[in-house]
Image 1 (tube, rainbow, N blue to C red):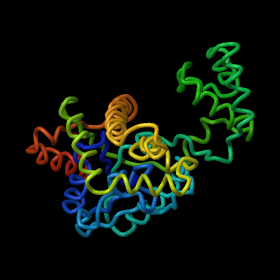
Image 2 (image 1 turned 135 degrees about the horizontal axis):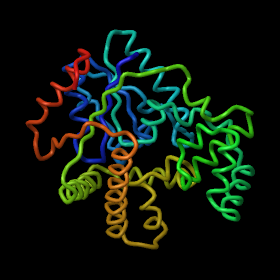
Image 3 (image 1 turned 180 degrees about the horizontal axis):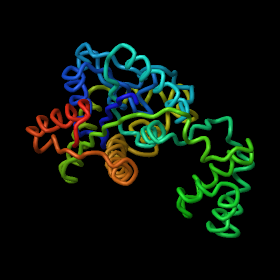
Length: 308
């Protein structure tokens, strides 16, 4: 199995700096696991790693899409697998870094590999109406009849994934559970970075202020002028909050406060996702920078196949 190191956690906890340090330490290359850093020209609001910060480390899946292009979870899985194969074949360690938890789960657990070709708006609407009319359990029972394994793994109230599994079966005749494993398997070690909630929120607020000083408003204005409201790229936190300001509906101060609030809420959701879905090994480098030695020791043990 190919080794894959992943560094996850909310914004503003030091993922980028740690990734560079570990890449130097363990001969690695970095794969961005962020849904927004794929877009060219969106650098400040996405906290994209700079050339100076890269410090000579090769990065993948950054600046690979224009702002008017979609980038789905299926695209990420496909591109990430290619990058992992390339990095591994060169004798280096793939290091995935980012806060988009669903992307990482899709890659490591084989979820959502159907891609956009299995999605059908009319069918999805019909299935959602069935859930509304007959209840979530009825829709889940329907899935259990055709794909018991998927039903066993998907909670009754996770209607979105129940619908997704039914979509795949109805459109292809193949069970969703059969498509979860495409024959690849990774030996992954997940590092989760976190810190005290109040401190995290303080760091997020400070980061937004730094982004504003670095030119975030100009990036948002660029998106707005190029019909960003219509694109996936334009819906990202740090951009869409400025649209009401550009329309004259709110003040700049109110827009910045919205960016901070949305960023804090997103960080909370990120932490919840990683704790519930991916279960990484948690470290607090913000308050305890000395734990870097423990992280390096744990990664070394994993690479050497020793018990953690």
